[in-house]
Length: 424
Image (cartoon, rainbow, N blue to C red; front, side, top):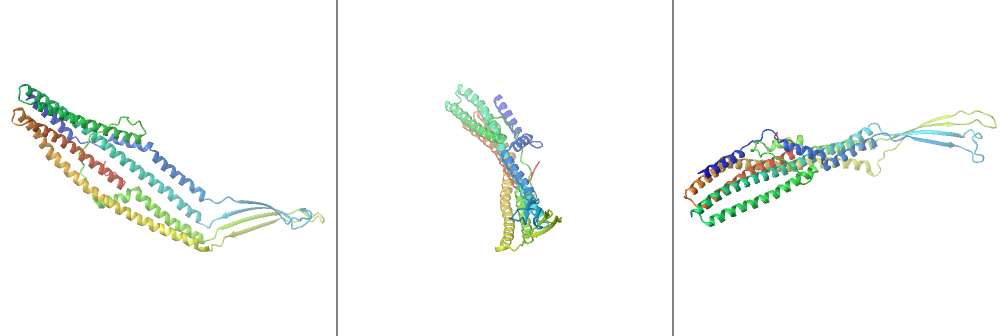
């Protein structure tokens, strides 16, 4: 009976571990995410792309450099003398091209939207990295829990093996029973090796995000119970509209198309060129007649004739871009709603299945194993029933954590799609 008490106590401990609820956020996971975001080469590339967009703004929204003109006017070719003719002068001029008022500001509005779009790309990539890390972390956490369950199962089988060997010595168990228990222990060992291989793979994946050695240690917390999630498609859609960087980027791109249209409208207005010239004249040498200098002022402007409809074509292009981004936004929402419907259904399914195992199958299977152990001890049932009960308990415990892991991975996917943390 000591054997039964020992196994029963182990089962109680195992059941207690099943119902540990993580209090507060997973600080280990948060630390991993913060490190991955900090060192991410992908985010650095996108940040550089944004800085490039910002650097383009002053290149296009300032006045062009003024033009300095130096020249000689009406210099006689027979003598090349500055004092022979009164029309001869030395000229210095300065000209400045000036776009139509408001055009530079319109160009700045267009270019600044590129930097905003780049920022949304950064935020969406950041959320994608967080989602990927969370899923790998959850898989790693489950794998380690599965290893723990398998180790506990192996310990239980070893205790059962002691009973079988004891009964074999008094001819109450067959050698086949001994072989069978050894086979079961070997199968569990094989499963543990397989799980440890997966653990190493997940560990390497996480460390790749952290830019660390592939086998650097990564801690994981307990797998909490499933949260009570009350999520509707309409609620998730509103979250996505408010928070999803990808949708924000499309909206900003549509806004950019509107600003492009305003900028193109300035092509129908003239640009100006202001010129000031000063002409210095020397006195005529033959008559010693002093001459006055000249000051000339010119205002030039282009004639916006829209040859070949080039400006009209730009307006049509901006209008088509606006429509394209509007349709892209609607199409993205349509795809998101499809994903939201699938995810909410999946979450509800996993929640119900987890509850069924936690409240029904798990305690029932634990009781089944206890009963099988007691009945085998007194010789009322065959050894194979004990093995079968132990394997069922192992499968149900593993499945419980698997359902919880799938639930949190699905929740992480929803958080990525909405751009919002749904549970703290």
